[in-house]
Structures are given as structure tokens and as C-alpha cells.
Amino acid sequence: MSTANGLSRRRLKTWIRLLRITHGMENHLREFLRVNHNTTLPRFDVAAALYRVDKPMKMSNLSQMLLVSNGNATTVVDRLEKDGLVTREPSTGDKRVVLVGLTPSGRRWFKELANAHEAEINTLFGDLGHDELSMIRDLMQRLEGETDGKDF
Amino acid sequence: MSTANGLSRRRLKTWIRLLRITHGMENHLREFLRVNHNTTLPRFDVAAALYRVDKPMKMSNLSQMLLVSNGNATTVVDRLEKDGLVTREPSTGDKRVVLVGLTPSGRRWFKELANAHEAEINTLFGDLGHDELSMIRDLMQRLEGETDGKDF
DNA sequence: TGTAATTATTTCAAGCTTAAACTTTCAAGC
DNA sequence: GCTTGAAAGTTTAAGCTTGAAATAATTACA
Image 1 (cartoon, rainbow over the protein chains, first blue to last red):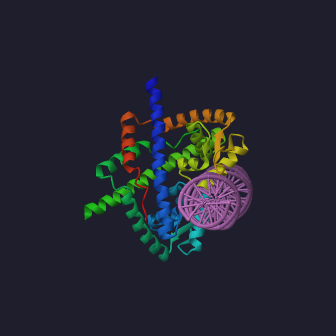
Image 2 (image 1 turned 90 degrees about the horizontal axis):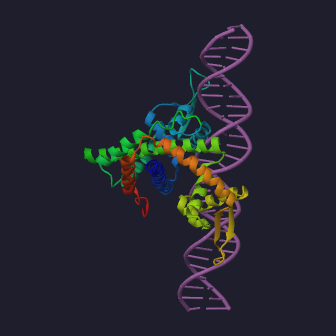
Image 3 (image 1 turned 180 degrees about the vertical axis):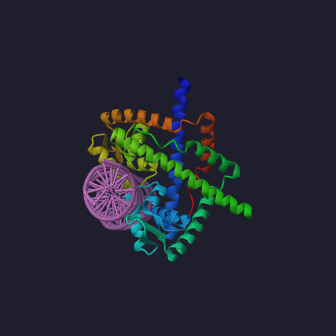
């Protein structure tokens, strides 16, 4: 019993630790993007998803990819669109669907940003080599999927 | 060169993976708190900090602990105060300082919440035993501190 | 065909979050 | 004492985020 409770407590402490580190890093990146590149993390994340997929993409697909609500994706895309970095076009087939994609200038903008972002991550992870990265990969794999299909 | 670039790219992928897992889990907990306990993650976090310290606490101290801005702490505390779960009292010494603490009812409220929360974490981490938890502890320790003292 | 259920997206209200400006108080040095 | 600068907290404006409601289009099927 002491063992089981101790394990539960340790899992909680591990979660809190994980959260502190990732929040700290996210805050750091947020400030990095603001100070050095005059932009925000949500905008960066949307652009990264669009760049990665490399072709116009459904709104719903985008929000699933980013783990955010549909409404959220709408407003971030609104702002990027106003800045001329992305475009919305109706799908030719299904008239409900809106396809979002980077404009040429959005693509150029993101490429620069992505390089700076990767360099910053690289310094933040400066202590970790291939072995440690593999460990994280494996550990995260074991945590993955646990969040789905729970009905409370 | 291929090695160095490969390492940088792997660090980036690891960061993205880390972020996806923690965001997924945070979303899960957010919904858990909303559906089962009619509350939110920020409120929970504030209460957890106050409960842990176990005595009235400076606002600035609170926001440092939670890695959020001062203004943010103010508004969350405002709402908890309105619900009668925390109190603000002026410090007897320094008149600028405001001390926040849980009310008795806030303490009772949090204790229940904390148990449910720990149980939920416990299921989310169900695959991980002591060895894996130690690995995460060590890996996070190596990432820690990297976010401070950078001047961009 | 008609209609009921589903899906894609936007809109809305509320709450969360930040950075910057502002107010009040304290501390140091003259 | 006075003044200057720093510190604690709140307020403000803007942006982020959510869940739920609303709209519009598609699909399933009676």
C-alpha cells in the first residue's frame, strides 16, 4: 500500500516537473519570438503546421493538428490572413470546407522564423545528445494515447 | 556537419513531441476539471500553490511560482476571492504587499480536487514505473535552468 | 424525394494571458 | 527631511482560448 501510494505521488510530482520545464521553455520561446521577431507562438504554430503539410489545409485539420479548438484556429488564421501571410480558399468539392495555406510571403516569413526557432531550441537542448533524445522519445511514446477515449 | 545538423533537427523533433504530449495531457486535465468538478486549470493551479505553501503568500511570489505574469495572478485571484475560496489581506509590515491565502472552505474544496486530480494523473501515467519516473526526473533536470539568463 | 442527422466552419460570451502603464509604498543616499 | 529609484500590485488594451450556439452544406435513409 505504501508502495502503490508512493508510486501515485511520484507520478504526480513527475507530471508537475514535466509541466514546469515545458512551460518555462514555452515562455522563453514566446519572449524570443516577441523580442527578436515581433510575432507570437500561436501564429508560429499555425504557420509551422501549414508549412509542414505544404499544401492548402482544412481548418478542422489544422485545429486537430495543433490540439486547439476550431474557434481558436479561426481567429489566429484571421489575423494571419489580415497580415497577408495566409489565404483562405473555398474547397471546390465540399462547399463547407475552407482551405488555408501560406502565401509566398508567408512562406518566406516562416522559413526565416523556423531557422531561428530551431537554433533557439538547439541551445535550450544543448545538454542532450542522441541517447537522451531517444530516451525522451521512448518515454513520450509510452505516455501517448493515454489521453484519448476516457469517459468521465 | 550532417551529424551536427541531424542533432539539431532531432532536438527540435523532441521538443515538438514533448509539447504535444504535455498539451494533450493538459487538455485532458482541463476537461476533467470542467466536466467532473466545474472548475478550471488556472484556478486549480493557484489553489495548489497556496495549499502547498500552507500560509498566506505574496502575489508576486505566487506568480513566480506559477510562471505567469503578475496581472494574470491578479485576475485569477480576483475570481477565486469572489467565490470565497481565497482571501486577500494586507501585510502588517510592508503596505505594498498583499497576502493571499485559502479560506477554510477553499482548503476543503481544494483537498477534494487534489485527490481527484492525483488519481487522474495516476491513470495517465499508468504505464510508467519507478525506473521511468527516475529517467524523466534526470532528463528534466538536465533541461532545467537553460531557460534563464539568456539575452537575445 | 424529403427529412433527419452529421459535419465544417464561424460567431459569441466568458475567461485566460501578456506586456506596458500606472499607483502606492519602501529604501538609500544626500 | 527630501528626493530619486526600485518594488508590489493593479489596471488596461490587445490577443489567445474555450465551449456552446448558430449557419450552411453534406450524407443517410425512409
